[in-house]
Image (spheres, each protein chain N blue to C red):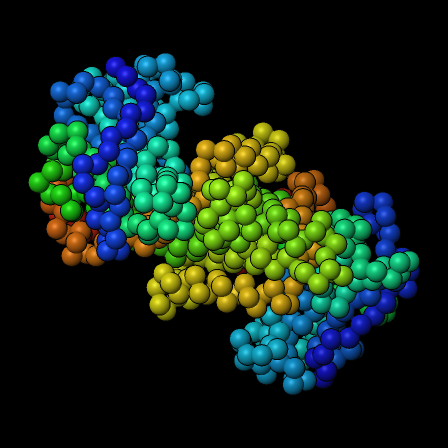
Amino acid sequence: MIAKTQFAELAQPLPLDCGRELREVRIAYESYGSEDAPVILICHALTGDAHAAGDGSGEVGAGEIGGAGVGWWDAMIGAGRAFDTNRYRVICTNLLGGCRGTTGPSTREPQTRRPYGSHFPELTVADLVRAQRLFLKRLQISSLRTVAGASLGGMQALQFALDYPEFVESAIAIASTAALGAQGVALNAVARQAIRDDPDWQGGDYYESGLTPVRGLGLARRIGHVTYLSSHALAGKSRDGRLGVEQYLDAQSERFVKRFDANSYLLFSTALTRFELSDEQLRHITQPVLLVSFSSDWIYPPSDSEHLAAQLPKYLKN
Amino acid sequence: MIAKTQFAELAQPLPLDCGRELREVRIAYESYGSEDAPVILICHALTGDAHAAGDGSGEVGAGEIGGAGVGWWDAMIGAGRAFDTNRYRVICTNLLGGCRGTTGPSTREPQTRRPYGSHFPELTVADLVRAQRLFLKRLQISSLRTVAGASLGGMQALQFALDYPEFVESAIAIASTAALGAQGVALNAVARQAIRDDPDWQGGDYYESGLTPVRGLGLARRIGHVTYLSSHALAGKSRDGRLGVEQYLDAQSERFVKRFDANSYLLFSTALTRFELSDEQLRHITQPVLLVSFSSDWIYPPSDSEHLAAQLPKYLKN
């Protein structure tokens, strides 16, 4: 069982909702479990990547949470875990527009051989899903037992079920919504503003300048991190009290800016802010959908999942 | 009845908790109602000023909310209003360290005649209260019927009652706390970081440079504004849906950076983050205290007021 990142190039240009198309799209992915088993697709959230499981040792499900190189959902994926690699083949891609191996704003454009930067097109959640659908076709995968994710990942799960009813058997949408609420919209807008206000962002064309907008991206991460965590969880991170909270955010921010790209952040933040499924669209999702929400979550509150449950023909509530 | 800003200079140097003292401290204030009536002191929050009531016409309680120049608490202060100017003299000062007439970082230092900037001392809530106590002495006011405020203003009300038991008859602490919770600490830290990350902040010495950190201060305001408003209230501001939320925050931010100073923001944000009253201190507040909190408030949640209520010998809960 190999748990290292692999790459596949889409066989055809990728059409986008904005009317443009992307050529030579490369998708970074990881695959856990037997290639013959039914497939589960895991969709990452705003700041994720393809490395959902494993600890780099080649063993899935062996990693220690928080250790070096451990996948972001290792606790959920592995032998005997929720997404059981003894029974399923679990696949996770780095999203289109990302910065961890898949074609994104930092990739060199085929024509110019210079980084896309500000030329990279805006993406919708449907675009992210379409890229994954073509990637799965490339891997000759003919159906998904389920597609699962949280927040932006949950949006993809819903969109996947809606757009490819013959391909997707079920969906799992965790801490998700049909459309982001006002506080989520506002906080995402502030995070994007922080990036664009950083002089080193340079309108998005910073890759060849030797400067990167680490201050703006660091602020965006701090803003995001406060909202991802409940007050209780955040207090728990802070052994030294109030100073500890600041140090925790500083450390999170410092690590984050080394692994993530500001333009990818802008793309995904915009896509999740604009995501909207109407009641009529939700009623067209006829596959079973498992909904999970958290009472402490005020960006994706349980009321958003209740709204989904009221419209989806077949849901399972957790 | 005159509702325009007046000024008073403290008769003596003001000692601060950090060990330094400030000379020639000027306090901007407004006074509403008869000078013979019992006095109510109103303490403003992070971004307030002395103009708590009136609309600039000289009439208190005549203003239309949202109109030009209307005081920030005009709905509460005036003839027949909660703080009834027919029965009380209501006074509000611009806090020490502010930027609306009272001595603060943008004021010229007595020695050098240049703006304090980074030389302005750090302040505690007890310092803010001490300045107001000396100011009231200067006005020959011998007691307060009550001292009232919300968030940072509520902290001042509690500190005032604790530090000057003979002078303060009662206190009103709205949306307040004995110590800010983890999410409030984190969001304030992010807002301060946004200001310090703006190259135009220049370590705090920007007053004579022709540049001001409007981007950083604007981000701080956006972050703050999201947290001041519940999701419901924010959605109500947004007639045009999600785009409207961004435009609302942009407009708030644009207005704010014209009237507020980044160094004052840093000072007050730090003071309210570091504020802490122990259970023992709370038990020494023997005056009646009215506590008000809002169920939608997650920076100053009702549980914080419940903690106050459990320790304060005499409280009134609303």
